[in-house]
Image (spheres, helix red, strand yellow):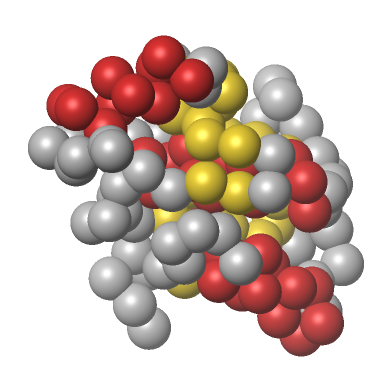
Length: 140
């Protein structure tokens, strides 16, 4: 498989560790929420989203279908610019691996987001300007 491929032991360790800068738990699939998390990870240092896990790390699992996987790939491709993700499955949990983006900043339909601690924060216009300056991009 890909760069990220996770082992069961690592998965269990991350569940215990809980949400953080590079890890987000989602109980269910929600396209609007997921696209926000994907761009936040791409704009920060990359990370993983575990779909089928409660905030406290309890696994409820979800039904993982090819249709669901396609929808998530389409969400990532629909970001601007497109975000590269890899999907994998452990114990009825769908893991979305998001690499740090090379073409920052990324945005989804609801805006620009950055990962701060264990939250994804929407950027204001001033913060977006600051982000462009920090990344060495030029705004006219």
